[in-house]
Image 1 (cartoon, helix red, strand yellow):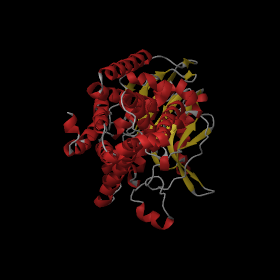
Image 2: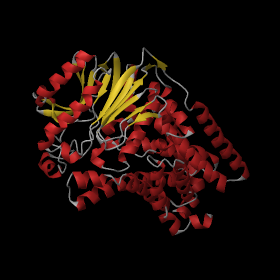
Image 3: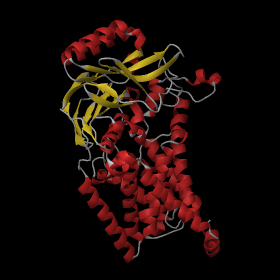
Image 4: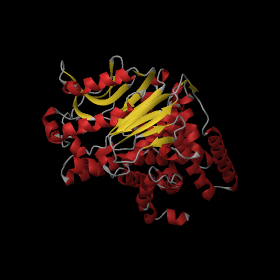
Length: 510
């Protein structure tokens, strides 16, 4: 097997093996693949030259993102009407950039972090991947999709999410993958160390899995999540506007009296100042019945003539939350003004949104405090930490109709499940065409609606207070520990004595 791993075929096999990682995520949920496929990559990196390590790392992650984000085709080409060549360029570029991160990481490890054995498999490789995922989740606005930790929402390693967050779970996924490599290639002593360590981690995860980290507060509240199931093309068709208003009115009316009623992201694709004749009566009816309406809604600031992708809570007084994490090349265009019009391939009427402020309070609704996110910004794990000090429920409004009948909505639901786990809060998820869901504080989906069908998901949920360990400290324990390990080993490698001893070996390896 060692001989095969040194062949060119084994290196290029990293591309389909990386693509197989996409099957570890929802909706497939074959989570062991995340461990086994990563173990294959780590085996390729064993005693390999830096350039070969970089190539295999690039192929592996590029394969994961090509297979895992193929749904961008539907968004950019089918809905956005961009040229096919531009669509392919966008998809390949994203995969290439993500693969480039792993290639650089692999090269650095092979070139300057030469530690071997159990320390490499159980500490160095997990630390490196955790830092990499964290870095690519924020650098240049970030793309925190397909982090390995998300694959474990239905596995015992999910027990670590309330302690260390998704990147902590990633650390233990890759630790397990390293243990697999150690069991295959390590000495007898190393096999005992890696096997017992991995077993202890999984036993601890199982013990923690399902443990309550937060406390109930007050009485349960009733909720109704409205799923309009409006196709994206119809949503932006002005001739369908009255029909869409009627869909939401009819779906909502039977549930007036429910404590909290939630509509999805930009349920009505016009700014709120154009909806007074419709929303005014809806608000009055909700107040008379004792309901709070929480609406995904576009907001226009007439003073600055800017638009926000926002959430409006209509209780005693209107309250707003504006989306903070905007989608590049869709909701905003990080390019000079003279090329912005050419790049706006999407048909969204108000593309070019303004981002909301970083410090926005929870919204009041039926005596509860709602920690709100809009669409994909709930994939930024640490962004919700500040609001958890007051939030008793989490709400995510989204519109995954941009991606059609693909895996995107299921991957997004899995991300929302991780946020509920990390926070120890119930998540109310209202999606335009699915997946609308009520997610418990243990990350399990307690109720959901079929996709692409209009309907209302109702339930009774328990508000909670208190902070999980992750909510108190965020990603810092994982990232500081992992970064410190890598920096210490790099410094040790570059020290004069160590360099002198390894000069000859470095020349041969390169």
